Image (cartoon, rainbow, N blue to C red):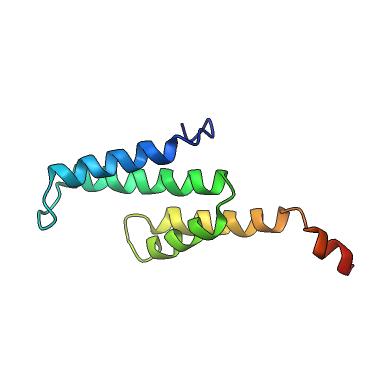
Amino acid sequence: LVSLMDVRVFDVIEHLKVQVEDHYGPDDELPDSVDDFLDFLKRRYVTALIGFKEFDKAEAILRKMVEDDSSDDFAIRKLAELVTLRGKETPTDDNQQQH
């Protein structure tokens, strides 16, 4: 769904996260495989946010991910991608009038 830019991706990711939370208690230590799955979902969520041009939301999550050793490489690459994408954004009418 992320690759197809299908807006339902946000609901699907949220549903999967809730299922994991319902299965494991808040104080339970998650198995590595489940932890990896949640990291995967977070990466896909950020990728979807960027695809839908929700740059501020994506950046906020990525800045937190930089501190996580398991996702720091991904986060740094995506933050660099955001800089590039923001540079390519079409100027608003206000910006065009100033020039």
